[in-house]
Length: 74
Image 1 (tube, rainbow, N blue to C red):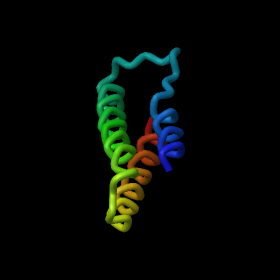
Image 2: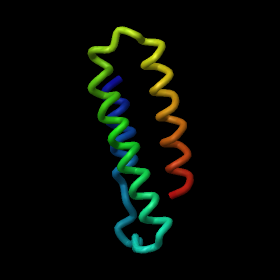
Image 3: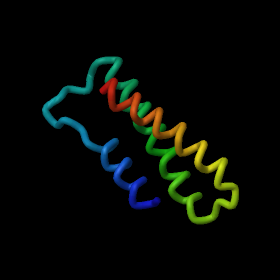
């Protein structure tokens, strides 16, 4: 599970280096990406210790929906 989460993290970290990030929407996208990366890091640490698997699965699904939405907007 942690390896798959690392793949999601890598996908979020990819930036088109030729693109300018000065527009307000780009700043918002970077902020959103930072939030997603933080949530991802917390969940990656929790995977090993969590006993409530249904709650963990629900949080992971929510995160994946938000990541998918973010990647479509960028």
